[in-house]
Length: 160
Image (tube, rainbow, N blue to C red; front, top):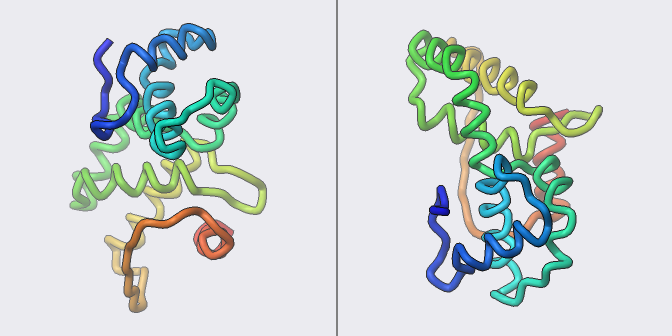
């Protein structure tokens, strides 16, 4: 089964992923998301992945969906996405990356945003930006890191 994404050269191979998915009873329709999940876990473990760390795959993917899940959701809502992108002259890549970020990290005080709520939030935010209603200076810099209290502060500010 070909994988829908590229993993680092030292990451697990497809046979290992398939064996783990079979062992854990992952349904066929969830295999691509599981493969992405497995690859991230494998990379994070430095190649010393234990099957026990995969046991909660369903819950972890429900909390932080795989990119392939978000892209599948976007395909299911293609008409809405295409209309918005065309109407507001937003680059498709910007829309998709914003949707992936919002689907993974988006939350409110009421809890995690569903993908449907994430889509609504992305449309609302990008519409306001396109209409020039978002003002202010925003200086960004990026570097590798791990999720910590600083990230939680940003998440809470972005998704009150």
